[in-house]
Length: 268
Image 1 (cartoon, rainbow, N blue to C red):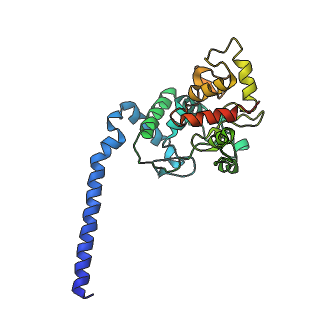
Image 2 (image 1 turned 120 degrees about the horizontal axis):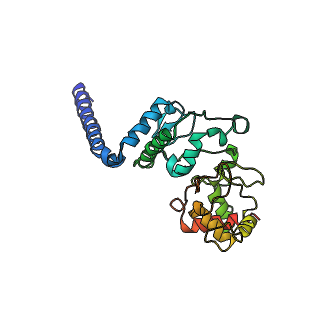
Image 3 (image 1 turned 30 degrees about the vertical axis):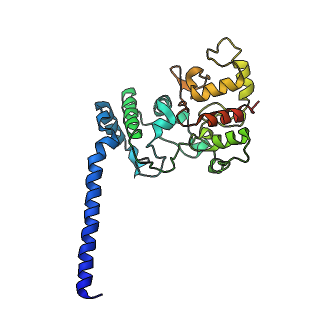
């Protein structure tokens, strides 16, 4: 290649890639409003963004990949946890985590109810941004299980519905394991699943139960799809008659719900 060819190659190559970069940049900016649902940016969302920055939340958490990596990414947190859980958590994180039991702790930011509502509105807006599937594997906030537990059993041992249901339970999302233990007496964020089938059979026969279930599997299915149909009494299980657990119908296929029911119904 002569010097003339080299110069020509440099000029043409640089021009082509500069044009591609410029075109992609312009195209991205033209779609920002659509991808971010700019029409949904209300004064409350903006107020929540101000709270997010004033409290330096970004010093520990990430949103859309921006921020520190000391604590979990919160890009989809409102879809993963729901408003009721977040409201209860933000009022007093120590009710959910402790440094002694979990090896970590989030400080109480002393947020007012108005600030909590604003932050949740901001995080809800963020969670609805079309981020083209990023992050590829959501970092779900886990309550207390060791990492090894979460990493295990993501694949079913067989095609049996119970084995498939256990794989769904251990998978993230929905990350059921992050809030529910399967050990008797071990309460994470939600009730332990140990003995749930026996408890359910007793509960649906009790006059305090107002749900629609007529059997233990019905109750488990109802709890997955409509957690607020009956809120189990507990300090971190619900607030204002609403369960802190989000409905999982949008995350799970109908057959996955039935597999999860089959698995949990074995805990008697």
